[in-house]
Image 1 (cartoon, rainbow over the protein chains, first blue to last red):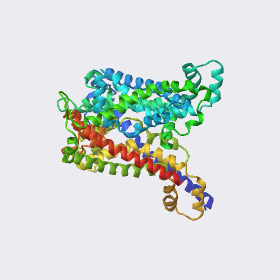
Image 2: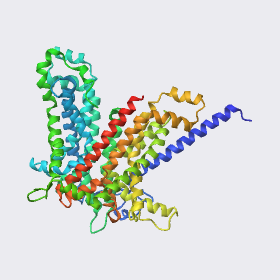
Image 3: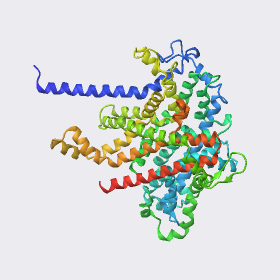
Image 4: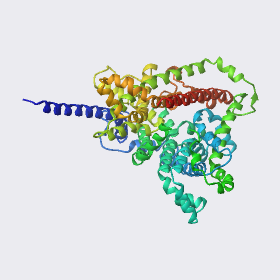
Amino acid sequence: MTTSKERRARKAVRTKSAYHLTGIAISIFFLAPFVITLLSSFRHGTEASLPPLPPWPTSGVSIDSYALLDTFGAGIWRHMINSLFVSVATVVLTVAVSLLAGYGFSRYRFPLKNALFVLIIATLMIPFQSILTPLFIILAKLGLNNSLLGLTLVYVTLQLPFSVFMMRNAFDAVPKEIEEAARIDGARDLRLLVRVLLPLVLPGVATVAIFAFLNAWNEFLAALVLLSSNEKYTLPVLMTAVRAGRLGAINWGAVQAGVVVMTIPCLIVFLLLQRYYMRGLMAGAVK
Amino acid sequence: MTGSGSEILLPRRRRRRRSNWRGLVYIAPAMALVIVFFIMPVLFTGWMSLHNWPLMGASRWIGFNNYFRMANDTRFMSALSFTAYYTVIVTIAIFAIAFPLAIFVEKERQFVGAYRTIIFLPVVVGLATASLLWVWLANVDSGFIGPALKALGLVEKSPNLLATFDTAFLTIVVMVVWKIAGFTMIILLTGLQAIPSELTEAARIDGAGRWQRFRHLTLPLMRKTIALALIVSVTGSILAFDQFYIMTAGGPQNKMISVVYYIFNQSFVSFNLGYGAALSIVLLAILVAISIVQLWLLRVGEERP
């Protein structure tokens, strides 16, 4: 004989397992493409054109796909270094520029201050896709056409509205007293900013950095338009050549390897710095 | 969004004279970048749009002819209507998946953090990467979806998903939902969690059913969040390019040319830079109009807390 208490407990267990079964099904849908690609990329070259059924290597693990990927463009290392250079330089410059601007907007009074702040934020309204042609021409005039530095400067500019907004808020949250005390101790200007204030706004810097990295690493259209020679291509642009294939045949092993190479850094950065990523997202959502 | 609120933390008066120029020095690098790589290009786009501007050779002033040309450009019109169609379908699809997901991960319980993270993972990889991944999954011979359906005995032979408009469109929508739903879910989750639990509790005690609570309590209280998620999804979809370029190269019979793709073709394939600039101005106007609607929607949301 079951009491009503037991029945309730059993119902709770049923609801709980139904919840987690749904959760597992959802997780499979969102994870499967990653897992299938990662496993398939280690199959032998002879298996590369076969469907991933099963996805794992059946005739031994091999890096054929990665070796083949290396034969495209100027070699995979070259393009990884290009992508890394652009992403890291974007992070460094975005942090430096938005740190200064955030500090300036938070702590100083100057003519047209609010107008200039709105001007920076308002660029968010304008899609960069609509200004690619003049960017192409302006970069050429500056001698920065087909250059990774030119592309980096464009990426930094695209990051600025969000980053300046984040950094100004970060500085606004730092109590004035800390700064006053540091001033009395003789710290001035840049030294004050770097030695005293930077540690206090570090969470904001982490948020700005992670968004800058992911956006620069993943960006495709601007890189496609602004880079014209093979050896300058970032990974996403290189992959269009892999996707196009050779002599009408696409090597899917190289595609899988390329997807893995492009995905891993994003997932690592996100999983390590998830907290700061979500903070940035919330700041955007609340704003 | 504007600079209000910062005034509270202004430096003291005695520093004011010196601060005048010093503040400008701090923001100078940011301003220089924004002016050179944003303001100037926007103005330059407007200027170029009034010219016949080939890649090589001299440009020629032609007034508003590029804009007149646009009105009779059937390929541009079909790019506009395709983009509108894609935006509507993909936004509905994202919300239809993201809203239930947000409700699914709302309450704190065992493993819910893991579910949130897993659903969010595709958001952090690039759209180009995701497109590349899915173009392989959708491949007829070497992919996963078609061959898996065949292995399960659901179809006679593996379907070529990217060969016809409807199946290619469906594949792209599924890819974008996989990639974006986690983002929309997190935005909606913040809105859900901002609803005081006393309110839902009170409604439950008053005998409101689950659907009634959702319809008359949750939805109205989430207006602002929904508006935000909607705007992000709509603007993102209007600017779609990567997925069409990489997955279908403009699609079966060039039916999948989005507005940005068409501008790309005009400017960087046919090198009609002037005409491309005029098309860009139209795209820019559409996006600015949407941003204004966004500001208005969000303000209306604020007036009724």
